[in-house]
Structure formats: structure tokens, C-alpha cells
Length: 224
Image (tube, rainbow, N blue to C red; front, side):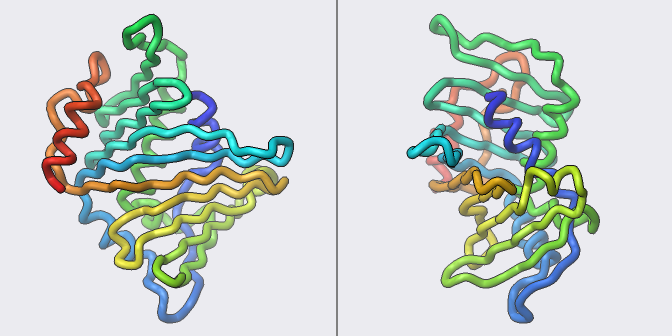
């Protein structure tokens, strides 16, 4: 879990950008307005870390569950099991060990809350509301809209070349995020099987004892 969120913390500092791009591409305001209509989201993710020193990417899989305003559950299923959960007022982490969930005390509450806020901002389009930190190019692909963010902060720019948000053509889903580093390495997070505006079961985002994943999945499937 720490590996996953160090990557996201370094990259998804999405203080929002200045808009440039194709004249027929949607504006960031349009993107925000459409994505913010999804009040809850449940989606599967595959994360691949591509490093020049390895032939094959480092891969992890799991689920992301989001409910505005700021509740989030990032659960990694393979190659290890862990949960990062926020109820909107605080953050907790768990790892599966010896047949049960163990709550971790890492002393990283403020940092993790910032990470959660940035992830939530990506999922609901909030990254476009505060115009500083990045320039943005919005372009139309064959069947998608791509928002490319270029960092303006010199410290971030030393390690992060760009962040790409690949959205569905109707702007209603985030398909993937690509974090491109200056040395050529990159991380790709691919989202699939997305369900929006379902009712998460009680304790989905509980920081003491999160609901079982099977119950959250059942609620999302019932909406489909």
C-alpha cells in the first residue's frame, strides 16, 4: 500500500490547471460539471509500474470505492491485501495478516488525508477548480478525451513529466491515469467495471472496521 500511494502522492497534486487544447475539445469546466454528477463510484483497477530496469511491469489489482464528499476506499487485492479508507474526517489503513485485518499505525495521517483528497478530486473532476500548479491540454481521441497536465512547480517537474487523465468520450468515467516520470518510467492505472450512483452498505468507509468487500461489491452489482 505504501508503494502505491507514494506514487500517487508524488503525482496527483492536482491543483488545477490553465486550459489549452483543441478548440472542439470540452473545457475543464464541462469535464468537472459532468464528472461531478457521479456521487458514488465503484470501479476495479489494475496498476502497472513500468521501470526501465525490469522487462515486465510491477502489477497490482484491486477496487476503488468513492462517495462524495471525500469518502474513499482503495483496496488492493493482489499481490498483497490492504485497505486505505477515509470516512471524510480521517484516514485508516489495514493489511491482511495471519487470517485477519490488522489496523496499521504509521503516523502518516495528514499525508494520507492529502492523498485521499487528491484521488477523490480525480474521480469527481475536482482537479479543475483551482487554476494553479499545472498547465493542461484537453484533446479528443478516437473514443476518449485526454487531459494532459504538465507541472509548473520546479521540484515536481524534476521527477514528474506529465499526468494523463483518459476519460470516456461522454466524460462520465475515468478510464485510466498515466503518470509519466522524467526518466522515462511510468505508472498506468486502468479502471474498469465502473458503477456509479449506487448506495454503499453501512461501514463501507468505516475507519474502525470496514465492511466486507463482498458486501460492497453486491451493492454495486445490484445497481447494474
